[in-house]
Length: 89
Image: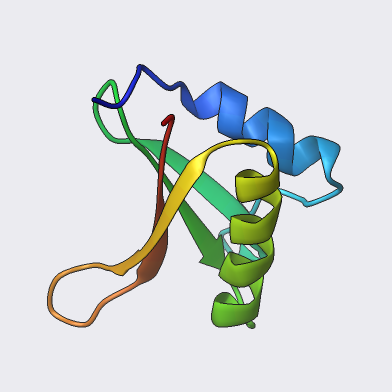
């Protein structure tokens, strides 16, 4: 059974690795980077905002796996955004 995971722990790994979080600018839209969302007690979702979504998610996946997290690539229902499901093994 997966253990409790916090979004701040995933954020710390990506920030330490030199990745920038995305920011929303009301004039220009999203500035590219990662975005993290807590999804219950045992899962965190990671998104990439901006161009290069597939490449960004692949890089995040490698970093998070190296840090010991369990990572599953997924796509939201209906063919929407791609994301990573992050859990602790």
